[in-house]
Length: 221
Image (cartoon, rainbow, N blue to C red):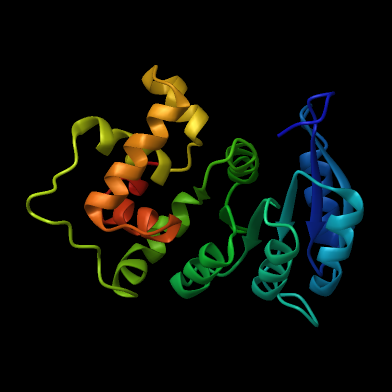
């Protein structure tokens, strides 16, 4: 997900101009990233994303008129392939789960070091899901308690390879990354992922992340 010149095009959505300026300075200090637009209004995100065609939208959660959760839903409905990375001060598991369900690819706290945001940008750009380690530490219990954990059939244990594929996906790696790490094809990754999800009763990304938390996988990211 890069331009011909290899630079990630990023749209900033945050209602504080000083925050946007700081983010812009941080992002444009990187050779492989650039800011193509910004807004302080969640209701303007869909229009700007349509016009500017950014690779990633960095979305604040608290914005006037239209908050980040609603803006994410609107954007993903209008542009299903849009990649949303949430940057917020909120570490409540309810926000996290709702945003993941809305289609956000990452969740980073404003309280975290700047390097965390850069790691998240590169992870979601590669097709992965990225959760700030501080978020995982703070909200794991709530995320698990928010819905019953999937209960696999006792006769349907997953293989070591299926488990490894699922672990890498849960911590934010794309199918392509997993294929490279395990020296297998992307198609094989997809087959292992589908088999593991079927055996474990997982139906989507939130279930994979919840299962990853249950297994302790995300504590080490």
